[in-house]
Image 1 (tube, rainbow, N blue to C red):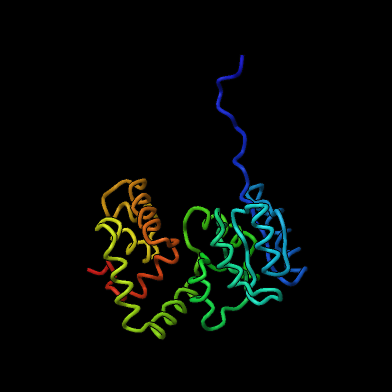
Image 2: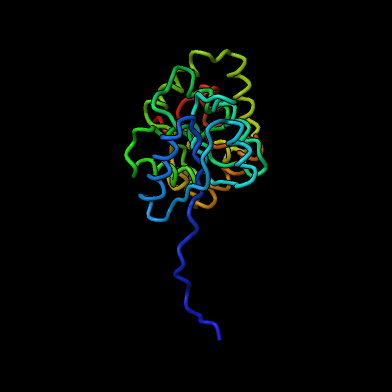
Amino acid sequence: MPSSEPSNAPASPITVSVVDDDPMICQAMSMILNDYSQGRISVVSTSHNGDDAVAKAREEHPDVVLMDIAMPGGDGITATARLRRLPAPPHVLILTSLSPKGTVERAAEAGAEGFVSKTDAPEEIINRIVSVCEGRPQYNPASQRQLLADLHAHRPMTRRDEARELLDSLTERERQAVLLAAEGLTNQEIAAQLFVSERTAKAHLSSASEKLSMSRVQLAQLVGRADLPSPLEP
């Protein structure tokens, strides 16, 4: 007779693919993730160019791809856009040591959900990977400032009006949830602001994402283009 006691089996690890044209970076990042994550993360493959990364993702379906920017055989931004168009797209974090001007905006438009620095401490890298799988974009303060600066520098009036029109196509609750998410609030914090359950807040965001065919990061960028007052301002 089978035991009725609950299973203590650990949850499946987050699967990660590392993409960098420097084999040493791939090796170092694989060691960090496999050795320091205490079984939370498993590196399933490494690639040295964008084309190879997309081909492997089609076969392996990783949860997260760490993507370098400048590589032969297809740059990381282009590869990110291709990955995000897959039937079951992985989360993509840009793997970089620098954030050249315009890179943050281009990465967000391609569907990347944040940045991981090659010089971050192991636990910081691991936390960013775990957090992005929980629906929390991983843009550090410097990246967020650059993204806003890029948006304000390149946002023509027509793009602002188009963004507002898209947001107005949502229900009031969906719109409120999206505006709060763009402020960096978690699902739990959004729920508290709207006086609803966390499950309901998540449902509003999922519905908005589905209606507009945008990821959470792309929704935040849409709010930035709309240039609306912060919903948290008194």
